[in-house]
Amino acid sequence: MPEVWLLKKNRLSIYLFNTDKYEISNQSLCFPDIPLQDIIDRCFAIAKEQGTGMAISQLRQSLS
Image 1 (cartoon, rainbow, N blue to C red):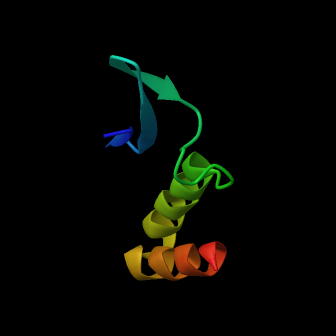
Image 2 (spheres, rainbow, N blue to C red; image 1 turned 180 degrees about the horizontal axis):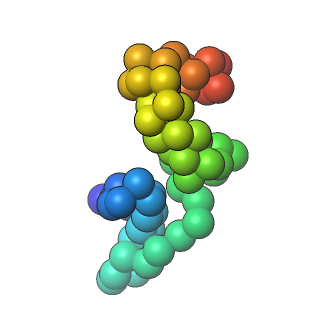
Image 3 (tube, rainbow, N blue to C red; image 1 turned 90 degrees about the vertical axis):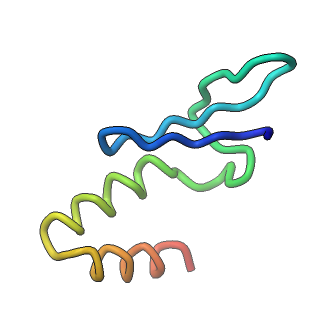
């Protein structure tokens, strides 16, 4: 598996496989131009304030 994502305590950790081990990375190989942690932070904030339905709706809008 070339890339693994872990979400723990509302923080996303991206690990990329490099030769024989996984190393932490700031960005995804699959989505190099998308600021994933910023999007996740925004989704959790919206979900907390306005509910998960609104968070999902905003996520869809931001990715389209």
